[in-house]
Length: 93
Image 1 (cartoon, one colour):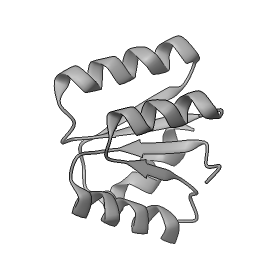
Image 2 (image 1 turned 90 degrees about the horizontal axis):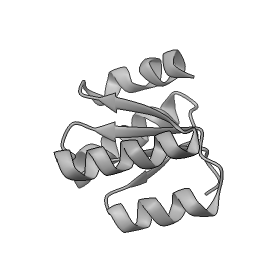
Image 3 (image 1 turned 180 degrees about the horizontal axis):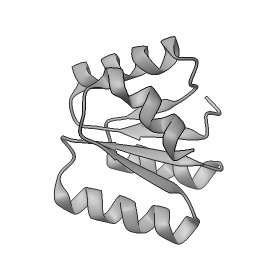
Image 4 (image 1 turned 120 degrees about the vertical axis):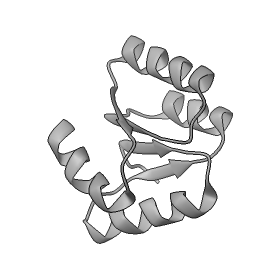
């Protein structure tokens, strides 16, 4: 997938809901549950925005934010329900 919006979380069920919400809103995005896979994807293509879900631990969250800052990638830390994410993404972009 060539989406320039990525999202990252720890709960597979929540990630599925997020994916469905974004697709229904017409937002092309790719989700990741694994830190290493996400970092590899961010190296392989341009990324405009990374959404970090509420369930991501402090250590990985900080590392991802630092990685994004160094590469000029916007970060959205989303702590609300998946139904509110499309509007939040549009505001950030």
